[in-house]
Length: 386
Length: 149
Image (cartoon, rainbow over all chains, first blue to last red; front, side, top):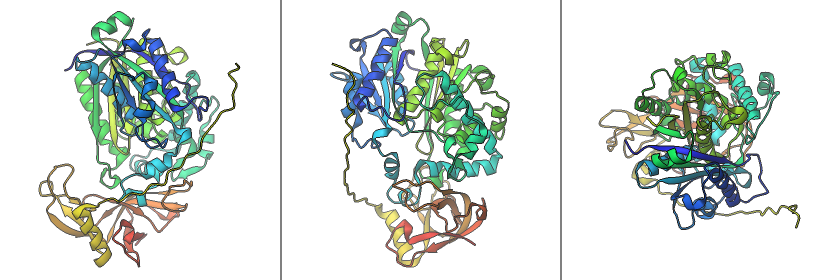
């Protein structure tokens, strides 16, 4: 085990479909300065900077080079993590490793994306040149492939999926940073939205957002001095599955990488009954069906019972385990930041700074990231250092 | 000065070209497709899986594959979708049907187009067969698509 480390500050931009009032570096600056303010620090206090971004979506090679100074990287130890959708959680895990290694005491992680400037479908088209590129229809088509298998395998219904969309967009109304806030959304409206790729409807997918999110990690001594209620990182695990879709066995049903990452993280912390033991979860839900599949992979219920959790209201704000009080990725998706936002939202809940989306008495938070076709990150945050 | 200012948004475009080396194993896979209309996999000496398309090494056992095996041309449709929305970079016009196909004799599956674009005529577990292109170039699209048997 490394040295103890905690999140002591977080900051987010207002996420929306187009932030034409700032360029990408200024967007990063906005999140970084918000996190410094939250942690009551200045940039002089920061030893190292980690950036997280998708690359290519905005047509900029080396986004760390073009945007790093917005995170205060000038004359500091700084580099970038780019692992697709997991970029933001992998960036946070990297920030944690920096402090846990004992080599750095105060590290800032900034995830960012400015979808409005780019061509996400073009970025997604730059997959392996021999196999996928000539056939697969980017993220939505590839998700739809897994969803149709998952529905056939587990009997999850369209209505259950639509309920996840309604929960997410209603929760988002309590989050001033969220992109899609839809207080009156209904199951009927979700299912009447156009089918993008069978069986996935438009309102079941995440949006594309502009946004950035920053997190500040600190060593034990500094965290105790500077933060009344630090969010201690108790576990941080990454697992990668195959990248060729033909090799991934029944992606959503097995979700091997998330299952394995969760198992390892639960073992580190001693979690036996995740549904009972966690007070809140912020999970990376690129679309509604994934959230239901993640319930199963994360052990909130048995395989095949994910739909029943959403039917029973178990994961609503007033349920046994509120999932995504922020509205989740389904409501807000600046992809390089989406994972960082999950970690920040988990930490916020422990800090007690969640405002209208605060869940009462959060001591243990589960956070996940999901990337490319089958990569997973799991973090467990706690109000207690051990 | 007022904060109100006209928002300037610049347009950008880059024309880029690349040359990707397939490597000896995928090259042979493509040559077999082009010249003999055969779909080839390679077996892992440790886990015994026949991996398709053929690959130099097994990514689970991390050892080189050693035995060439012909698979298909028939197989089972593991899953499918039909894409209706349009994106600039989609490989085909909508409706675009594609799926994951487990070829007979293979332990992994391949991703490919389906000839049938009516969802009601597709099903998980149905039998499909590779249709080869008339003009073959040594490319994954030397298989035109898979057609329900």
